[in-house]
Amino acid sequence: MICTSHVSVMDTQVIIKLLKEGSLTGMDLGGGWLLSTAPLGEVAELAVPTLKPLVECFAEKGFDWVIFDRNADEVDGLPVYAW
Image (cartoon, rainbow, N blue to C red; front, side, top):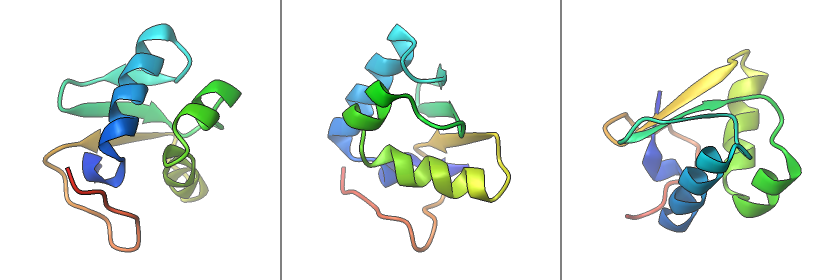
């Protein structure tokens, strides 16, 4: 589980929209998201460029899913955006 602050505020709105329309695999959890670490589709990759390196990081470590939560800790070495 990582903090939603690893995604920009603008990208947050896009993630919610992509989840609703099915262009991103996962679900909105209210205070964050559960996202698949499978390769992003072209629409999601182009719409949310800050998400690709995060998803790839967790996929490389063997995770199939990652939870982004507003109350989770920030992960050292990953970009953090001010909200």
